[in-house]
Structure formats: C-alpha cells, structure tokens
Length: 146
Image (cartoon, rainbow, N blue to C red; front, side, top):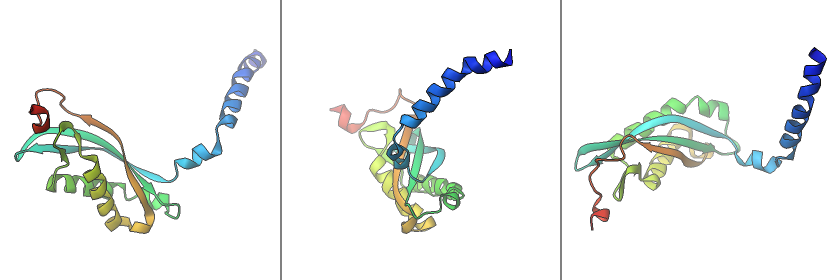
C-alpha cells in the first residue's frame, strides 16, 4: 500500500522539481537582501484633526554588503522611527486621504534608517501595501472639490 502511494505521488514531485528548476536564478537574486517592517498605522491629519489611519507595509532594501541578520534585528527601531516621523509631520497626501504621500514617507524613512544603520547598509525603501482604515465619510480633498 505504501509503495502505491509513493508511486502515485512521484509524477507530482517530478513536476514540482521541473517547475522549480525552470525559474531563472536572476529572478531569485533580484529580491536581494531586505528587512520587511510589520504593518504600521500612520495618521492622516487635516487641519490638525485626525481623519484617518493608513496601515502601511514597508520593505527596506539593503545593500549587497549589509549583514541582513543584524539589520533585521533593527526592525523595531525602523518602525519606531517611522511612527515618530509620521506623528511629527504626517504623510498626508493632499489629493487623497486613503493613502500616504509615498515620496515623503520614503525620504523620511531613508533619512531615519541611515541614522540607525548607516548609509552603506541601505539601498532603497519600498512601500509594499497601503490599507486605509476608512474609505468613506472622509472630507473631500481640495484638489477633488473643484
């Protein structure tokens, strides 16, 4: 009975192996080294009033010479720096209150991350997802009002 199960599973195992072998090695290397931050709720503020939160997932791409294990240990510091920067000067986008201003967020996080681990360890910052807490009953952005 065990032999039949093994023989029945063999074609699937071979197909999975062939699919894995057909993936290009360049595609795997393109991901490089990175630190994924746990999702963070960033405030959206209008006229000194909190109107929404946007949950943001971020990936900090590391340089080839960086020690990824040591950098991943710094993940809480990266998140803390991001939250502090967002509360100091919210990343509110003037045309849409359901997303953050990604250019300002990336620049601020890159600046903070450089202070934490040094510029030689960093390559870039990527926003992997943005999920707003509210999508309706928000004020109308000034650009959309006219």
